[in-house]
Length: 162
Image (cartoon, rainbow, N blue to C red; front, side):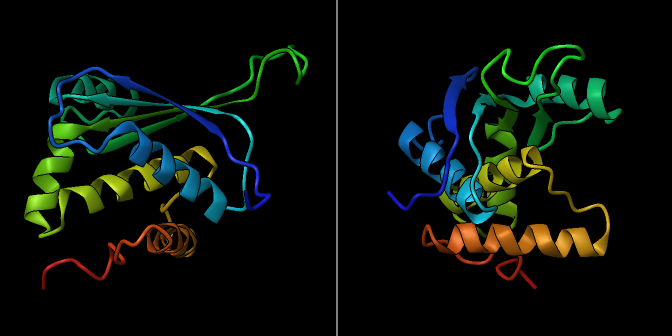
C-alpha cells in the first residue's frame, strides 16, 4: 500500500455490457484517479447503464435530452446533520456502456482505454474538478493523463484522430 487514502467503489450493472471491463478494472481505475488527485476517503457508486437511462438523467439534471458518456453526482451532506452522522459518501458516477463503445470507435481508441478514461473523468468530477474554463480544464486533464499513464494508457487528448 502506498499510504494514499482511497475510496471504496460499489459497482451496479443496470445493463448488459458484454464489452465492458470487469469490476476489478473499474475499481482500479477509480482508485488511480483518487490517488492522482492526492487521495480521498469515502464511498463511490459506479453505475453502468444503457442509452435510455443516461438520456433521462442527462435531460432531467442537465437539460440535454440525449445520451452522454458519463455523469457525476457528488454527494451533498443534508443540512443540519453532523459531519460524522453518515459514512463519507463521495457520490455516484453513471457511465453509459453504449456511448463509451460508440465513442471509442469514433475516436479510434480501444474500448478499454476509453472506459478507463471515463471512470477517471467521473471520479475527478466527484472530487470537485471540472473543465468549464481553460485553467480548470488543464488541471483536470493533467490529472486524467497522470492517472491513465499509471495504468498503462496513452494520453486520451493526444490520441484523437487528426
